[in-house]
Amino acid sequence: MMKLKKVVTVGLLAAATLAVFTACGKKDASKSDSGEKTLTVWTFTDELKEIVNDYYLPTHKDLGYKIKVVSIPSDQYETKLDPVINTDKAPDVIALESAFVKKYVDSGQMADLGSMDGIKEASNDTYSYVKEVGTSEDGKLRALAWQAAPGGFFYRASLAEKWLGTGDVAGVQSQVSNYADFLKAAETVKDKSGGTGYMLSSIQDLYKPFFGVRKHGWVENDKLVLDSSLDQLMDISKDFVSQKLTQDTEGQSEAWFAGMNENKVFGYSLPTWGLSYWLKPNATSADKKVTTEGDWRMIQGPTSWFWGGTWAGITEKSTKKEEAADLIKYITTDPTFLKKWTEDKGDFVSSQKVVNEIKDTYEEKFLGGQNHYAAFATMAENINAKILTKYDQTIETLYIDNCLIPYSKGEKDKKKAIQDFKDAVANAYPDIKI
Image (cartoon, rainbow, N blue to C red; front, side, top):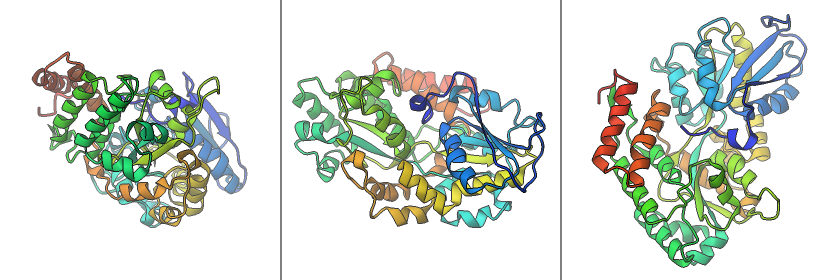
């Protein structure tokens, strides 16, 4: 499935790497094998390591125990976590991505955060959808996130001026406010560029918004559901590929990232974190001779959607739940930290209170001084987290590989593509009704 955020640009090691950050003082915690008191955190993103090292520890100097952050490549994360989560070798705190957060939240292996350290009260300002994602089927809060992740469309202002006649945010949005218009704009880009320019680099920039805006999740009442929007996704994806309106790269591939510092790709569909962790690092060419920094703008595009986010929870097997709860409460609800994190990283945080304090005066130099934060604040209110299920990561991959990509390339007709997808789901999950 998708390569998770930050992994591509910060380059997680091929094997798990350890970063141990030390503080000394009063609180007690169980001893590690070396005899040192240690709170263990597992994560698939280096972001959490940075939060612990640069924000939590400097403001919590008398902990009396170490915090060991273990960074595991995203494609190995679940494989390493699943065998130990229900044993005495389980980490204390685990990071969870939206693609698989429900798998763990509903597993019975996560502690109830709502009963710990005033977290329930502290999360009153957290966006409702963020808490909804972290709430298990029995109504208990099992995980919280420090960020919300609405998605937008990031485009090159200079290319928009050249190809669409305006680089202005309002002007571009008016030309792509629905997918019929988005397709027309893509045709205009191809025509005005003489076939050298592309509206998108990959059909990922189509299917991620469609997945995020569905009204129905992949599985409801143990039955596979194909949301009606997926039919439109298949058709528009085929149009983009057959008409060469996209470079037809693989999402998050080297070629996909390269388009961020070239003059061929008009725009990318990215969530909030995509700006800081994908677009900014790749806006300058490897040889440093070319940069597109300052030439990007952000609009909603055809629809409001969301993608990703990182939740943190405590394993039920942890013997250091109090210490773990202190950490999670700080990184997901502390307004001082969340505001500082926003100012330092430009990340869109999960606290609606902090967002409201920032949104009217925010400026992003990379986006030509645009206040995109205010737009994201509006989009965040429209996120429907009810579509997330524990099956998402696997089923989404099966849909892309067996149905969407082969259909868009003309390798299968629609009926066969859909049937092949259903067969793949039936094979992966025999208990799901097809």
